[in-house]
Image 1 (cartoon, rainbow, N blue to C red):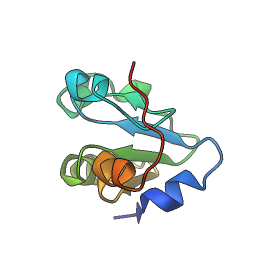
Image 2: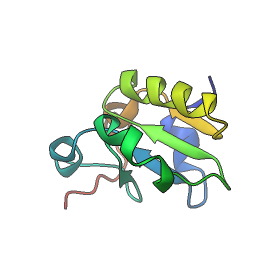
Image 3: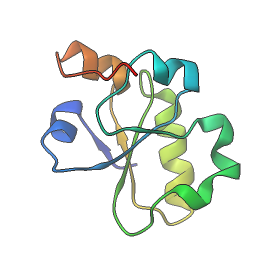
Length: 99
């Protein structure tokens, strides 16, 4: 599985970032630029996942994002897991969006 740290993610210029947490978790705060596509809806929303660029997958702490990354990679998507998830993002002192 491909994986990056939150520091590596923050250094990227406009990465495609998909947050696979549930909508209420996402609304509680997320990394800037993240798009919410809950793991529970993934099967019905596969068409929304870009296939022309690497896709970075984030959740709360890394468990769900790792499973989604593996599932997408098996479908040929260039998926990259964000180690530590949103918890690591917040712990690193980075900006969090609260809608």
